[in-house]
Length: 179
View 1 (cartoon, rainbow, N blue to C red):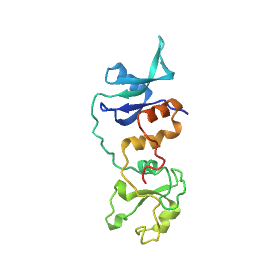
View 2: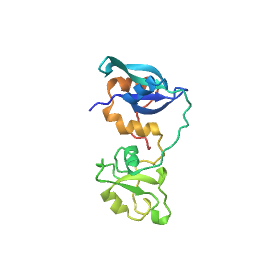
View 3: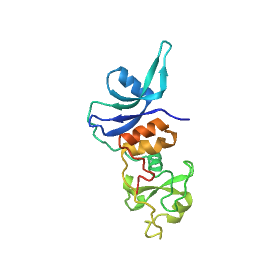
View 4: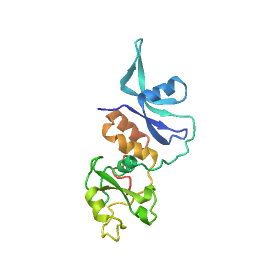
């Protein structure tokens, strides 16, 4: 299924997030945003008429680039569902979250201390640090921006028009946003 996302820019033209195009259309109707670009091929239909669908909008505020707290799913998305130790791609149901510094040793639930891990590597590491277990991280975990999480979450469903808009507005698709 291809989605029709809308790239959202703040008043300084910095990309801040991605909305469904219907939500962006509602903001346009309420005069809460300025539409910078419309989809050429996508229309929103009503019984009376068709409306152009927003591709890129600008909201009239400066967004404080807040950071979300890590969730299990957000860690998997940040790491592209890839085990930080062996590089294996894992399914959501098979993935585990590993604490680099184990919880029992004061390790916290923070972006920089959490990585996606396959169950085999997680069992091998156990209640040790990666160094103690003789395991090497393939990438260093970092706190992602909300834009990076949105890009990784939906990138397989982006259409060509949206990908061109991302490029035009300077948004780079990072295959590995953690390293």
